[in-house]
Image (tube, rainbow, N blue to C red; front, side, top):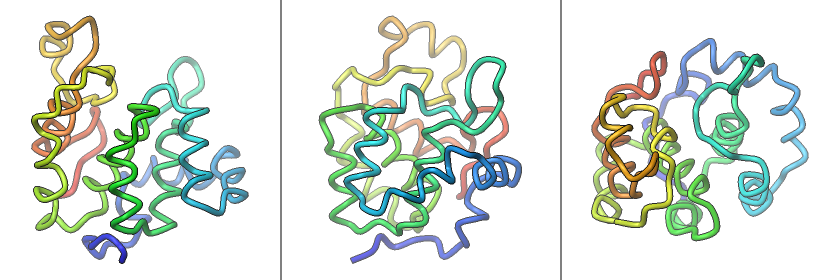
Length: 170
């Protein structure tokens, strides 16, 4: 059974400039070879080291994380697959992409049901910068730049934006 979505077309889930850059990126075009959920999970594990929307450094293309998030949008994940993402123990980035998928694509009426079990998760495994929505003070006052999964999921759930230029749907 597919996750209940907001019904918006996938090309309208992300900011227009980010979406256009993802669709035109060489990396995203290479992802066409990935046909299964498990292949995308493996790609996240091997390639993702942050979940900011844009690459860091001088190269300002879309990040591998957001290209893979968009790949999941095209696959229309099932409830079982989403539970697999959110409970994945191999990489915090796999879990983070699961939370972002829900926040961007899921029906807002269903969000709390997805996020609530993780709000009190105290596993400190996610870099605070992954969330991109913490103020500089919040970021600098946590565990050496790390944040627990519960705090990260709560922040994604309650905020209206992700990084400076990426509005989250309500």
